[in-house]
Length: 308
Image (cartoon, rainbow, N blue to C red):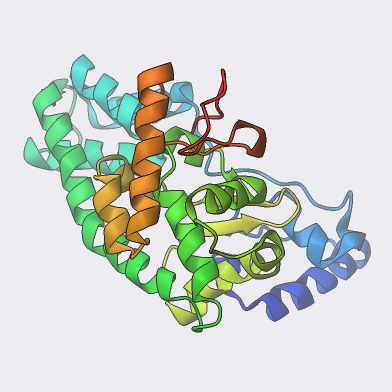
């Protein structure tokens, strides 16, 4: 079943209940393909599926596996990508097999390669071409990403907008390396406490609403694929669209936060904390702090702040 995540939650729950019957009383097995990183999503819908399902994270690709993708393509078509071209892609694709395939495909198009070489190995690509094609991907994602930010921050209603706004602010202000592993709800709460300056949703508000963000993106915003998903069991917010991460990695975060309507006082406070961390610890320019490492105007940074 392709794109299982696009079904309404009520239908997913209903089908999850039916899966146990199919498993116990028939020879049929189902492969559910969907955009989520929650290993226990179907179990949450139906606990009786325990020991009856196996989860495969098809979005996780190691560097060695991505290299294998490139090599198999080279062997099938009869070409050899430049080493600098290959290295730049692998270092900047953020583990996305789609990005690797797309950049390699565009490099072949640029070289006029539209079929196999019939035995003659052709050299393709350069470092400059790799940089240009990666920039093209960022540019192509710009419109979609900015549209997502504008739409998501509005939330499904005025009463819930604050939850969606501060969730989005935390994502925008986080280092991409940290986002790849997801953000715990406690990290979002700490960010709000530190930079909300007395405003912002509570942990209870977040825990109540975050499980609905995938359905909001699919059925209200009609975004395909979705950008953010929530792992209910781990209480973790995940960025499931790697192309969004690649786009975000090349943006001016302050400018994006302004465009997302983060309060000016909160942005200025965030910038001050960033400078403190840079000056004292020479760490990343974007931070998320744990409660015990809170940094403010009247407090000194701890010896080891939690950095994004």
